[in-house]
Image (cartoon, rainbow, N blue to C red; front, top):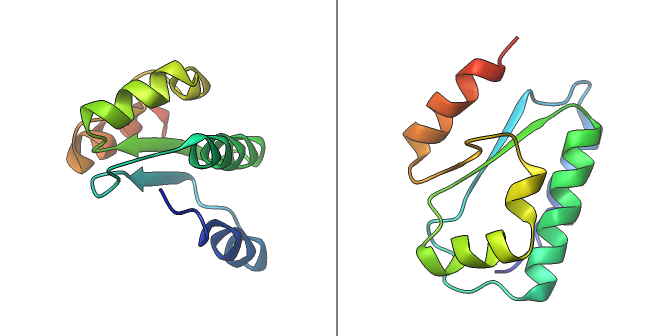
Length: 98
């Protein structure tokens, strides 16, 4: 997984006056995720959560889902925050909206 765009993404968020309420990260095109990608994803999740942003993941293949689980990333997220489809991610976020 290439996380070269994460720095740019974070800079854009910092320039806005308000954080989004939620961030949905679609993983459908991610075929491989190494340790650097896992660590970067964990860092982004942590930073967003500290800013009060709900982070949801969706559409991981079984290989990526297993890596996320083994790396402990799913524990960082709210219950049901890793969904098989984008629509499921939107639905799972509904209880956390305020």
